[in-house]
Length: 172
Image (cartoon, helix red, strand yellow):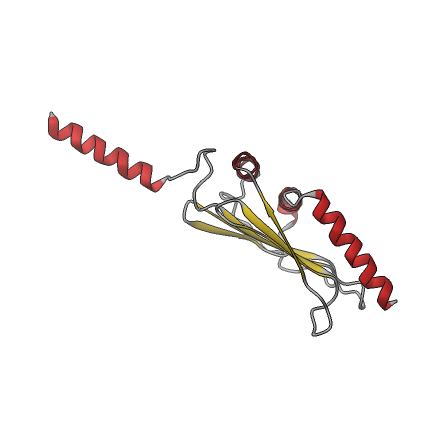
């Protein structure tokens, strides 16, 4: 009887270690990287950005207002998600089946359009949403991309848009 109790306790501890979560139920290893690129446009109208969220809720957006080059600036703005915000994002991504879906790349992707890639890590697995997913997955992929972009505070987006507008005005 005592042996059974010890075995049960040991199994519970092992299961808890395998499913370690933060206080919001979010996996301790939850992180993501999202990269968006404008389609083929002449300088200075092209731009790109990357959003990175770390397991501790710290994040940053790296914004390049043109094709990368020696005379092109890159702006990096940090932000922080609270535990509740991080948990809400994780729950929303789970609701969109990010971790369970078999994301499939479009075999004949469009030429010249904007593209986005997302890599999400949770529970020790990493899932990648390719640049262009098949038609049946496109609406969910767009909703997921919008969820990620919404994590960057609006004040930062306004600042980056203003900096980009100024950058383009200097070069037109």
